[in-house]
Length: 379
Image 1 (tube, rainbow, N blue to C red):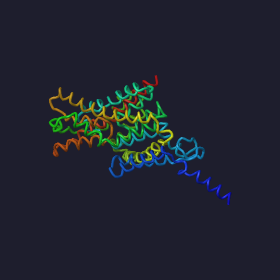
Image 2 (cartoon, helix red, strand yellow):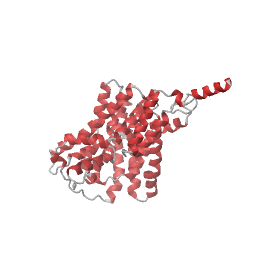
Image 3 (cartoon, rainbow, N blue to C red):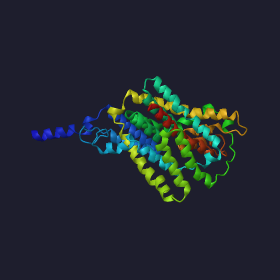
Image 4 (tube, helix red, strand yellow):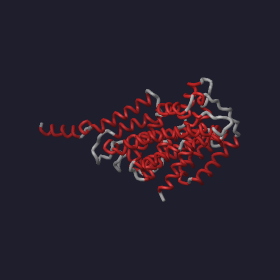
């Protein structure tokens, strides 16, 4: 009987219930909130549901040495997480994005690309803010990239510069991407007048098939010669777009925008979520990163809006400054928010197509920003 009681006590001591403390409970609640926001509120469900469940997986307490936790070298989760830490998943995500994206609205009115560039101010201002708060330059650069509202780019740069911060930076980046419909509208309304929000955009010109095919080739050469460190991301983005536009490789384009990106999104979401293991994740640094991430995202949105208003001082045909908010690279959510806010003011004003121009240029801009920061930090 005594032996049975000893075995029973050993079994109880090995359960997650016994090892559970407030830190793990906190993170389990966070995971449930992510899943709720993804399912009930439909905030980026393809991201929040895998990340939320990954948070649950990463915060079941286990004994070290069993090969179960994501930070144990011999665990399955650790091997899957290597796709994040080695920077493998982000370029594959960019391949899928390229195969899904139509750049014709940007090509029809290249001027709107400037809004995508202006929104990247959030990256560099947050970089300076992180330095002022005591983060080292590599960590500050990784935190600053959250301002691009581009999860894969944030993960890619952090994997190169500050691997220890991948968990909090990735979760912060994807959280703010998912909360675009909540965060951006108040800033948009604060920085624009009703008259400005009612501005109608002129119809863009039709873009030829030849232009669409040439763009990924020319764009790749121009961007990667400017920022060679962005090669893994932009190379895959433009390659995916070439597959889409050239037609003759449609099978590869379909695979890239369906099977590849869906599989990688699942693996990325689960492993990023699992990396928030409470004893590693719940630190003062993580809180600071989330706070700076919110500032970065707000500054990026405001920068795009303000730059659009400045552009209108010199343009005969005014642009709707709401388009500036689409300069952050949360594709296509920022463009949808622009359409929604503009539609509230005038139900007959359709801004979505125009907003896609700064939105897709923001993707390119954030990758170039990451490349520039990486090249500076590695010198």
